[in-house]
Structure formats: C-alpha cells, structure tokens
Image 1 (cartoon, rainbow, N blue to C red):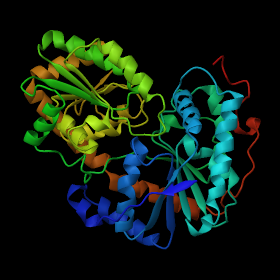
Image 2 (cartoon, rainbow, N blue to C red; image 1 turned 60 degrees about the vertical axis):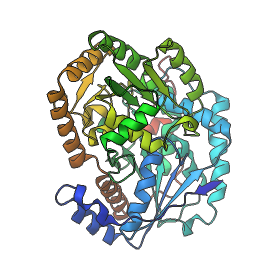
Image 3 (spheres, one colour; image 1 turned 90 degrees about the vertical axis):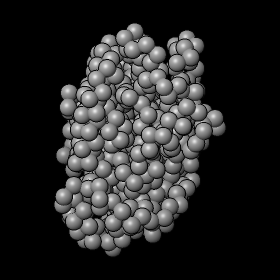
Length: 445
C-alpha cells in the first residue's frame, strides 16, 4: 500500500535571501500558472537517501507557493527492496543480470502496489515517479487523459548494465516524459519520448544546511570521539560500493603520512529501508579499517550525540576537507551540502560530480585514491587555498544547485508535458526492436 507523508508548508519568502537574481520571480510566475493542478511525488522511502531528502523540503516549498502537492511512499514487502537494490547496482554498471524470479518479484509487487491507487484521479494531475523502485507502477494504472506522468531517474546511467537496461527501458513508455540529471545519463532507446535534463539540488533552509557555528560543530564532533585539536577529514555518504569507502580510507592513509595526527570520519547513518546491503558493507569496511582509532565509522543512529541532520552539519563544518570519492554518482547531494558550507571538496571524477565541481576552482576531481591523498595534503597544508576554494564552492551552489531552481525545472517539465497535447494513456509496451534494442544486448554481463 501507499503511505502519505505528512508535511506542512514553508513560506517561499524564506528562500529569497539565498537565490540568484531573477530565479524567484520566474518560479513564482510559473507556479501561478499551474496553481489549479494537483502534483504528486511517489518514491520508495521517506527516510534516508537523496530523493527523500529533496522531497521532504520540496513539498512544503511547493505548498508555500500556493501549489497543491503531496508525497506518497511505497510500502512493499522487504524482498522487493532486495531486488530494487540489485537493479540500482546493475543500472550503475555492475556485472550480472536480473533473474526471472527477481523480475517476477519486481513486476508482481508493483502490480500489487498499483491496486492501492484506486481513485487516484482525486490525488493528482501531474505525477512525478522517482527512480526504478516505482517505474513499473504506471503500466498497471488506468490513467485518465488529463493526467501526466514524469519518470525521474536519479541514477548514473552513463555505463548501465545492458541486460538490465533492456529489461526495464520498455517500462518508461508508460510515462509522458523522462527526467535525467545529466545529458550523458540518457540511455539509447527512449524512442522520441520527451526528455528533460534536471540536476538535483539542496535546501538551503534545512537544519542540515544552515551551517552550524564552529563551536557547536566541534562539540558534536568531539562527542563522536574525534580530537578537535587535530586535523580531520570526512566523507558523508551511505556505506555503498559506489561510494568507495575503501578508497576513502586509502586516501586518508596516504595523507596521514604527510599530516601526522590526521583523523577520518566516515558518516553513513543507516536510515533508508531500500538499502538492505548496508549492514554487510559496514562490516566489510570495519575490517578494512583494521582497528585504526583515528578512523571513525559512524553508522548507528542510536549512538549519535544529536539528531542525524545536526551531526551531518557538524561534521561538514568541522572537517578541514570533505571527500566524496564515488565511482558512480548520479548527483552528489552530500557533496553539494559540504560545498554550501564553504568546505573544500575532493570528489570522484564521475557522473554528476563532474558537473557540480569546477576542478581546481570549486574543488578537486580525482581518478584514484593516490590523487585524493595528494590533494588532501595540499589543502590541509594551505589554509588560504582551502578557504578560497570553499568560498568558490559555496557560490557555485548558490548559482546552480539550490532547491527553488530544481522545482522551477520540474514545473517547466510538467508544463511542457501538459502543453504537448495527447498524453500517453495506458500505452502498450513497445517491442524491443522498436526501441532500438536487442534481447541479445547482455554483452556477456
């Protein structure tokens, strides 16, 4: 069944001091044109992960603009999340393929969930369906002619597993438009469907992003066991194979040779229900850390000295440098959060991170732990460089990656879909050859 996330509204005027010139006026004008419509966002979890982070702020902001907006979350069986996590990894390039049993769980659970959308016409006119977890829903719903569905993919699809792409791409054709974070993520076979390129963004007003004062940040970080009299670097991300926690530890070990007393905080508190691999990953990374007392692996919400968002905020403010050493990254929200706080960033030279950061100006992009280690040393030994780079990072976020810009892009995509004419209503799945794909596209995966 679906669970409606209960949220209030936030006055849009609260955002005005943070926005670049002209953005607020344009957003308010577009929202005014769409104020009679009902907007619905659907995803797989209300806690943990970037999508939940975005929607928890976006829905109140939409309501503050006078829009009717709601957020619904899937409530499937736990086995469903095991399958969708496998899909997540495959779509980001992992070898292998979905088994017939996994496809049965994926499609069957979606069909069962779709039954709970009875009377859905009273819920929304424009539906934003987020990520592969909810992709199969649209084929099982009897949509009316006035409704529009946009599927939003937040993943890095620059090098997807071709077998899985072949399996799932036909499901996109039950939607009226597709949204990807970058042009390079648009897969072949969209078959002329409307495609919108919309990078994600962060909420400058969330408790996580209103930068903590340095003294408060130090108190929280100290409670994690960190010696605030010594230098500290951090990564804030899930314990996930694509976040490369082992490479983060390697970079820290390289830098420690030149910066004695250096400490590492890896903050990845497990909240998301759709990430069943987290416990195994944490155990693996703990083993790799080899009991180093200066490596702080923080993952248990029950042991935190403050609410999760406050701890994230404190770590990003107290760290001399923040890492986001991903090997796949649709868009690095935690990287953007650190940039917004004026903390210099070293990130993997992949996916959305390449778009977020101007190398050498608002951060560093790296292809190896060795590079990351060298840049850590450079920033730790040159506070003036670190301060200058942090300031440039904050301004880049202000210009490009704040939540009102993201909402404006979503509304423009919705408006384009509404103006396009005849919607896709219960479209049959196109044949593979019509998509420009082949069933033999597994490429040995």
